[in-house]
Image 1: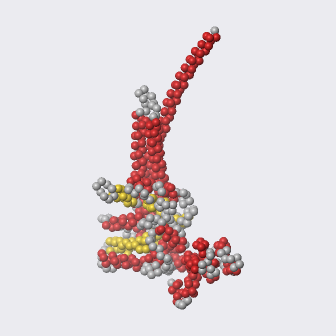
Image 2: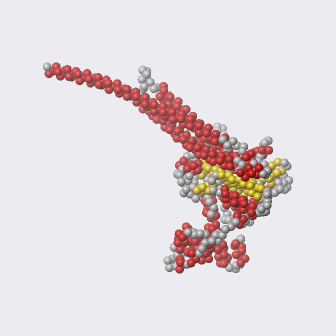
Image 3: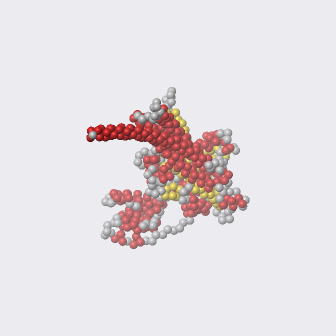
Length: 632
């Protein structure tokens, strides 16, 4: 738009058009990255000797080096630069350059206050970012039933493309196509739309906020309505830093509020809004190279840098529990899930692990949910979103189709409950191997619970084998015919050492299982806190009930037993603890056996010493008698 305006102002003067555009870039911090690229190109074009160092320079450095006074003025006005940054920029000029002492460097900085309503406009076009698909699920009423229309589109196409038709136009096109192919024309339209769920592929606050703005503008909501919602959102934002990295994560919580609808202060109609941030366990991928990133991560990181948006990354189990400052790489590459897959499938080089991501979910009005999951490192779709979508479609086709979510409230409950029941709901497709008479590997779907239960059972079975082996080694041949404890042969020592080594491996494996289950239990406990905040009525809810109004009855939506998942984890931990104790007893038996042998050996040495003493005494006595005889 600014380039179009500059073209109209200076139709035949490209230099002035570019100058106006560069000043516009210098007016807002979020445009500095684009300005830096323009100025670096100018520096290279001039063949400046310092161009090789310009890769690390900021916009202030580049404008100073190029003597762009007007751009420099706007940079100093639009951002509060530190004295160190200013001194660095001036240091890029020759010491004899008068521009180093120019009064422009002491110009006052001004930041004018802006109301939330000033942000209420369509998002500005941005540089293209491919590979990030937003999913839209529309629920339509048709012939006394609920039909589901699903579609997906690039986030860039929906929000930031210069000629984007918008979210509603995109879904209208999809609904029209569905109507033409399956039902009567115009069956699915804005009047039949019951509610909508939009799911974004990354925890990007800018995308979530811009999607809200687009939705509000398309619904012709008033400026003050968006301002009130933004104030509510700002109360829910509490980002926790991770030491040593740029990445942050949102403090888990759920806030609810009823907002007035309409421009008039006398409006009494209320609309419930919600903001929820909750960690969840998911299957993910880890790069076996030194860096746990890929091209998708890199492109998103560049986007975050140019848009001045905070990064919210996926974390491994140990990274979640110990923080990014801890060195967890070796444990990340050797998770229980990874080892189980390598043992039980044809994928002996598996890079599948468990990760801790975050669900962000906003209810922005009575008909719209916007959610996002953490960006995935494997370029794959969000498996939990796919499972939820499949579950909805399966319910729709089943005899219990009446149980399908029929409102925003019930869909929120459905989504959150699914993320909490992750032990059973999180499914991984695996290839088991080629069975007899078949040419292709057999596939199987396994849950997180099954993987951990199988891992404990495998160790339990191995413990029973070791116990039988130890019994055979030290039980049947422990005593000789006279009932005396036999000596341990070298072969027996070697066999017992193997038993001890295997027992130690079991204990190490069980410890890893218990550690990871405790981390999962920590995540589940956090989820339980968020669920309580979602379902328990607030003081505002109580007031609305008392005054005869109809607030969102989230307390009626708790279909999940809050203790179900924690109890399942406790059962696994109890089973693992019993296996560890049984295995430790094998080592105790080995130590007791060594003690018995040492005691027996001591007794034998004692008897030998006594016999030696008696013989010695007899020999000494006879010698003395012989000596006396000779003397006589």
